[in-house]
Image 1 (cartoon, rainbow, N blue to C red):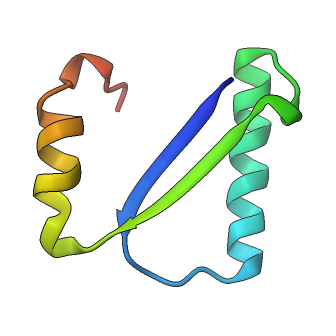
Image 2: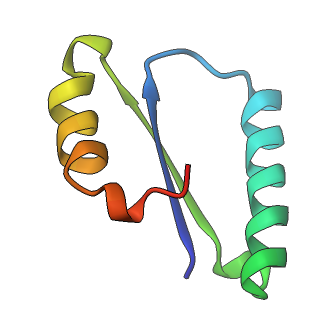
Length: 70
């Protein structure tokens, strides 16, 4: 705990981009939640743009607006 899940349109990330994202998210999450970096997990899942509405928008955004902070 905590777990961060990111779904995005398919693209290739460089190792430097991956490291930058992991470092920034981990720093923010550990500071806000008051936990150590070993407790943070981050999943990054590519989603084909043609399936975004059915796999992400409808079930996770439209159906659960009470969970959205942004």
